[in-house]
Structures are given as C-alpha cells and as structure tokens.
Amino acid sequence: SQQGEEDPQALSIQEGENATMNCSYKTSINNLQWYRQNSGRGLVHLILIRSNEREKHSGRLRVTLDTSKKSSSLLITASRAADTASYFCATDEVNNNDMRFGAGTRLTVKP
Amino acid sequence: EPEVTQTPSHQVTQMGQEVILRCVPISNHLYFYWYRQILGQKVEFLVSFYNNEISEKSEIFDDQFSVERPDGSNFTLKIRSTKLEDSAMYFCASRLTGAYNQPQHFGDGTRLSIL
Image (tube, rainbow over all chains, first blue to last red; front, side, top):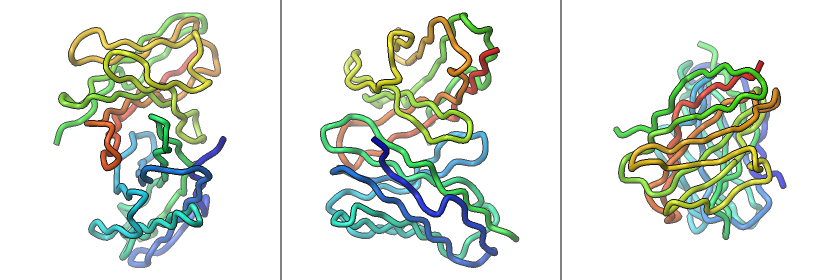
C-alpha cells in the first residue's frame, strides 16, 4: 500500500518566502522523516520526528506531526535558491523494519 | 561526518547479465538497506539486513535479487539476469540501531542502466 503521500507535487516560490509541504500516511508509525534529494543525487536526511512528538525544529526547518490525522508538514522559512530540490517524507512503520516513501514535492526557489 | 559510499556511480549492463552493486555503510552501523528509484517515481524499499540476515524484504525483492555482507565493511546487492525494467537508481542506506529515533543515512546511489 502507498504510504507517505506528499502535496503539493510541485511548488514554486520566490527567494525569501516560506515553503510548506504536507505529507499524509495510512498506518501506525514509529517516526516520520523528511529527506531532501537534489537532482540525480542521494537522499539527505533532514529531520526525524517521533510518533510521540508534535513539533520539531532544525535551523530554518519546522516539522509538525498530527498522528490523529496521520499527517505531517515541513516548513522551510526564508527560502533560498539553494533549497531547490525534491523533498520526501518517509514513514517508519510499526512492526516493519523498512521505510515507505512518498512521491515527493519538487520545490523550486527562484532567486 | 561519516558517509555511506556506493560504487559504481553508474553501471551500464546488457540485459540478461548479472550486476553487483556495492555499498560501504557507516562503520558502526548495524542495519543496512537497499532501495530503488525508477526515474521520476518514488523511492521503493527492497530489503533490510541485520545480524547477517535479511530481516525484511518487499515484493520487488524476488529470487532475482540477493544481498550479502561478504566482510566487515561491504554490503552488496546482486541482480541476476537483469531486465530492462531493472533500470533505476539504487540506494544503499545504513542505520546505527533499530531505535525509533535513529534515521537512515543514504549513499548517493548507483544509476543502473540496462540495455
């Protein structure tokens, strides 16, 4: 089954604006992680939020988790052109030793 | 900062041939994973490996695939009798422990092109 569906699929903003990406999932999770992928490159881990946490910050990143709605959001504040990349959420499911990725949000930050 | 390294970065192989994709996980990590990403699609889990055995595998990971940790540092994915649809980016990942606050760390991937 699909897990970790992001929206929007694509987002284009001006430098300095905030970018918000959302992720929904279907099953019970241990944690939810956000990754970034530059074109043709590997996945860079950004932030992990555990199922008993509601909000987490790391620099310009803010992640929220609502387990009742099975959803998460990633906010990037004061975006920069270098933030242009694809962003994926991935869920670490209860009773599974794997992660399920969404299709990602392609973020373009225009200088 | 320690990294997961993968070789080669790009592998071109004739259909029907066997390929071995190599990964060196972060040295003190105990859990290892392979994922694939077909161009333009989502990252898909293939297999997880712990304590020298497969702990979980997806429906994609059929008899065509195998994994091995031949020594203390390498973690390999072998694909036998490759098909055109095996063309994808293959990512290796490692994780320190199975604890819920531990992220997976990914390599830069191997782009596999089957001709």
